[in-house]
Image (cartoon, rainbow, N blue to C red; front, side):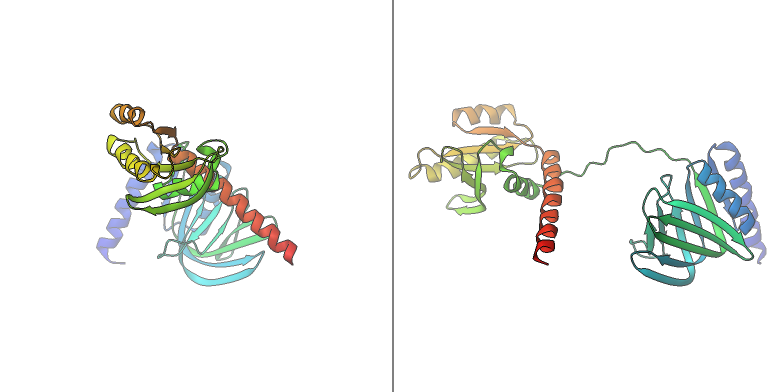
Length: 281
């Protein structure tokens, strides 16, 4: 080994030892023996820590299907909920994984360190010939994941669940072309009146009310009972003043609510399709 590389590794080992001593619930080893890896793995699992192993391994999976992958340098992660994920050096998708709640076992025999994950009849075996790096740490993340809808998604949510506008609303089409532009959602209320809906994912402004007013006025001549609704999380004071003056309406609708509707309704639609397919068969 070149002198510089040996010195660099010695320096890295020194800082890692110091870091391990300073931080509770953290451990990292570079080029450890397989015996040492086995010890660290058991410690990580008993502490419900996140375990990371980088090394040369082969993978064998048996369950709903079966697969084998020969030796190669890969990254294995066992999370605190015992979910397992294995990555190659490139690409965003894992080469294999197991869900949370898996049973993890570690076995060192001869020159092989085997980590096995068991979940409802599925078995994932990862055999390491050598380990470049192993680490575990206690991590905490209680933040809520939020992925909110776009205006296109909000329109989709209205079409999926029209009652979020009002009880009895029946959407007929979206992106209806008129001489004044494209109407986001066009439909009828429970009394048979035509309803035009303009969707905004942010606060509705005065210009948005003007836009909606143009759509409504462009169709009012042949449809005097037509209604115009702006659907948005909130409305600015100046827009609200104009809304009242022009006899238009506001319905509070947030991207968060629409995102939830799309997830839930989409899941139900998928189940309906699966059930229909099962009945056809």
